[in-house]
Length: 359
Ligand code: FES
Ligand SMILES: [Fe+2]
Image (cartoon, rainbow, N blue to C red; front, top):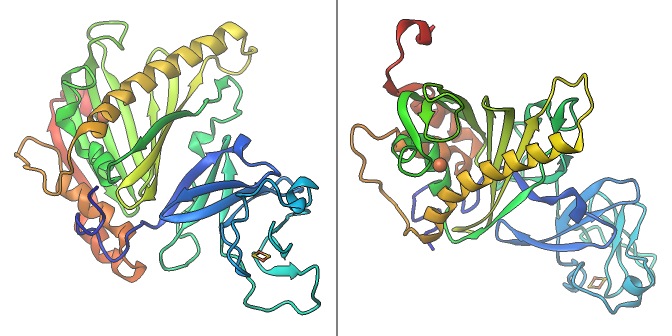
C-alpha cells in the first residue's frame, strides 16, 4: 500500500476537502460506526432530522459510541435524544457541538468532555463531511451536483458502491490527465480534443471523441466536461442519448486505501410531462452503462501496483500537472497559492478541431 508520503504529496497523510461518508438512508437514530481518513467515527441522525458525524470514542473512558447493542441505554432507545448522543457506557450525553451537556450521576461536567465533530452536509441522497488537517472551516463549498437532484424531468441517481480499493486516491485522480486510456479501456475512437484546465481547487477535463458503441450515428462525437472539485469529487455533464450527470467519489479509509462510489442522474424529459416507470427504468439502465464503463477503470486500479513516477511520453496527458495540482490538498493553506501559480491555466494535449468546432 503506497502512502501519501511515498508519493511526496505534502505535510499531511489525508487531504483537505469534502468526503462522502455514506448514503442518507444510513444515517438513522441508531448510531453507525464508520472508519474514514484513518479515524473511527460515528454518524447519527438527530430528532430534528439533521445528520451528525463525531469521533467514535467517548472522552470519559473511551467507549465506542456506536458499537454497542447490550447497554440499557441502547436497549431503552435513549441513545439519541433531541440532537444529542449518549454514550452507552456511563451515559454521558454530548450535544450537537460535541460538548458534554449531561452526566447522569454528576452535576459537575468538565470542559474537556468534548467529542470532536465534523462539519456535515447532506445533499442529493448522500452525506458528506469536511476534513481539514489544520482544523479549519471549509474554504470551498460542497458542489450542488448541477442542481439536477429532484429537478423536474430528471431521474435521481441510485448510488453504486464500487468497492474498497487498496490504491492511493492520486492514482484515481490521474485519470483526469489520462488521454491514452480512453481508446483501449473505454472504447473511444477518433479523438477530436483533449485538454485540462486548472483553476485553483478545480481541474477540468475537456473531451471530444467518437465512440465504438455509445453514439447513435457513427460520426457523432461525445463531448464531455468533467471536473474535480477538491481532491475527491468528480462530476461530469454529458450529452448523449440522454443528458446525464455523473458523480464519482472516493474517500480515504486508511492512507493508501479508498472507498469508491458512482452515481448517474439522467434527464428523461423536459419536466413538463411526468416521469413514467418506463422512463425511470431507461434511466436506471443508462446508469448501469455508466457504472460498467467506470468499472473498467476500477478493474485496472484493483490490480495495478503503485505508480510513484509515471514514465511519461510527450503524447501522454499532463500527469505531472495533475499531481502537482493534487498536492494542494496535502499542504497547509498558506502554501497553496504557490501550487496554484504552478498549475493554473489550460493544457491542451490534442486538438484536431476544424475552425467551426473550435468556435
Ligand atoms: S466511557 Fe462514555 S460515558 Fe464513560
Ligand atoms: Fe477512465
